[in-house]
Image (cartoon, rainbow, N blue to C red; front, side, top):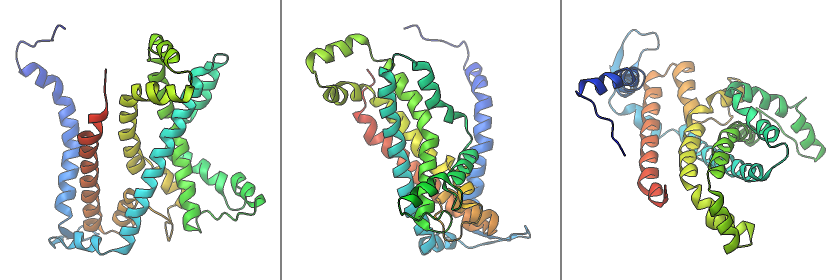
Length: 293
């Protein structure tokens, strides 16, 4: 393979400079400021700050409500990631076999991708509304009383359901592309070796989809942690009360509603460290099991 060569090192640096400036302004500078603020007790009106050392972090560690939010975030992220990947993979496998009306079928599955998270949350509120929601009425016919915004786990299930629904099209597109990239010769050889479609999928197709699955695993965890903010905010209607909250939403509530800027900054730093550890673990242990050839 012919490698690109530059006459002088300044030219590739010049090409990278715009991206490096954007990363410095929108990531490193806010991250550094959050780290600094986490050691101070900030005046909510901007009249000054007092150095408190690790007090903001010790306050988080002893806060039962913060631990509840952490546990809910763990459950929320695990369920959204697992079901969004599993359902999308199932739909992609079925779509890969569709011959007639394949384009229409795939378009219907992918159109949710264009919906913004707050709009998806609003649709979820309409479906799960206590008085007029279609799903609430359906559950009522089955003798199940569903109370969105009142019952903790009812609200949590609505958040999880809407978040899964919103993410399925993205996963579906990648899984379908991965399936269609498998050579026909490999599929025919697999059919000769094993007549069972289930065994062929787990022995041949699923390992070949591993690089795509690993990429989507990282994307889905990131989505569950950060990009579901609009869905959570819409469903709790800006009044979290005793309803479940993710860690990202709690940063917003404590920082912008409670004016606890130091505590909110400490939460941001903790979240940043957790995501960094999670990413290192994924690339350190899971990527070793992935084969890209």
